[in-house]
Image (tube, rainbow, N blue to C red; front, side, top):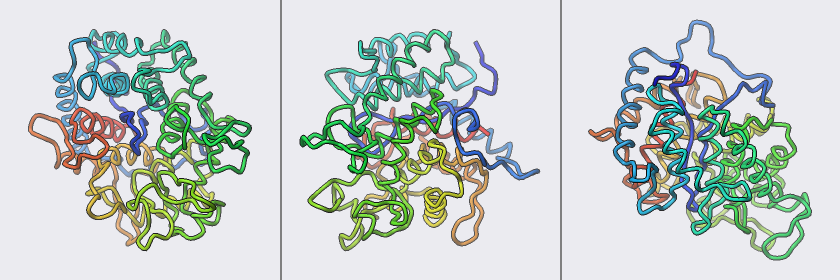
Length: 412
């Protein structure tokens, strides 16, 4: 059972544990069909997206990574972080990688069994999650991405039900905050999404939520996407467009933060690592900036909009693949493989094969990503982060990120 070679690619994922990540794993329809930017860039005539040697290297890395993931398949046909932890999310993530590979399709026995496992977690409300573990937003969103990627008509009702459930999780004007206050359009929570329980929203949750809706064909001008855009704008380090108090004293660098917490009349970071040196404002960093960048594009924000231009400038200034950009030095490898994942997803959405950094150096982002992951892969085809934070020391997660990032890079 082989799929058409055009299916040899993929996108995002992540695990559902209150970590600053998104599960962006999904399809990317043409922007014109989904309310995306009207002025999507294309590769200049005659400029190769990647060399044949890099394509061959990526193909091998993907094949080896998938074989390693296959070796981690559990007795029931699903995947988890061990002992059933995050099983629906990790199963969906791995399935996404499998159905985007030419050797697998929705009718392959391994894939069919995996989706049977995933569908066991569908709840009466339309969401996909384990009630005992929570994280309803993350898990449902990653399930949507896998179901969409399968391109199987029999999953359409499951997708529709899950999208309806996800939309119902959004914090909208007129709802009530955890402390009993009414949410209005100016409240900092407005438009956001949390883990699926009552609590403060964050860009990681919202970015994954927007990715799932985008993959399912929800247009950028949909009211839910436009409400989400308000929250996205309020997590950007850009005083020109962000009305929140923290943005007025921050770096004003155009990057994005995970989430501000509300303390008195000022939004403050959740930890010292999220603060700029000296404690003024919040720190922008790579994985959240690429998440915010692609979220702007999915919400149909024009490429000339100051928010998009500022985010792209941040990317040019902080270009690097050896660490999660602008994280504190001692924590620079935290979330590294998640960063590779959103890096690939965002730059493919941007549509330019070569990025010019602040020094004028040109970077073929696909080839550099492939080379970076090739330098880090284990002999048996898996990836593993030395940093334990955000579960990336668990190789089933880091390997899934690596495979999906490479598959995304192969999508032209």
